[in-house]
Structure formats: C-alpha cells, structure tokens
Image (cartoon, rainbow, N blue to C red; front, side, top):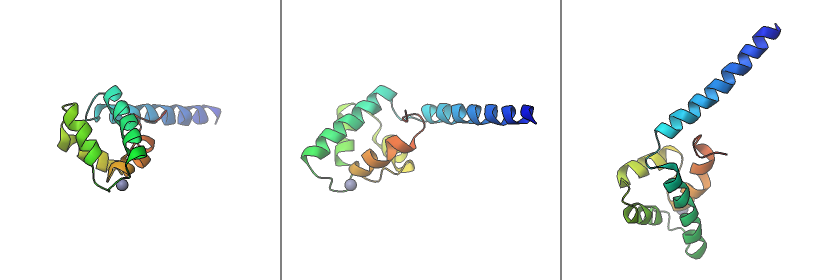
Length: 99
Ligand SMILES: [Zn+2]
C-alpha cells in the first residue's frame, strides 16, 4: 500500500517534468526572448490600451526577427488571442513559462 502511494507520487512528478519538457520543446523562440517579450508587452499595454489585435506582439516579433506565424499560432494555443490576452493567459498556462 505504502509502495503504491510512492509510485503514484513519482508518476505525477515525472508527468509534470514531461509536460514542462514538452512545453519547452514547443516554444517558438528561446525562453529569454519570450520572457523579454512579456515584459515589453506589459510596458506597451501600460501606456496604450490593447486594441485586441496582436499589434505589439507582431511589432516585437519583427524587431527580434521571430517567426510571426509560429509565434501567433503558439500564443493562440495558450489563450493569447490578442496582446492583453497574451499577457493574461499565456505565461500562466504554459508549463515552460510557469514558475
Ligand atoms: Zn486585448
């Protein structure tokens, strides 16, 4: 019985690690670049309200020569339907960005 509990715990741990590794492998750009993008978006949206497009995200993508299509597709997968949703949803729902 005790053995089974330990086994279940191990499994949960490795699933979480797998989830994180999978999320990291799917990132459309290096993690530091994406983290910088969230910080930059936060500043932009502080000064200018979101017009519910990806205008700032795209601006960042162009400036940093990221793959715009891959970036948007990835952001949408994690609930980032526009710049403010990118900030509100993506960081907290993506295993590679959490914590
Ligand atoms: Zn918005």
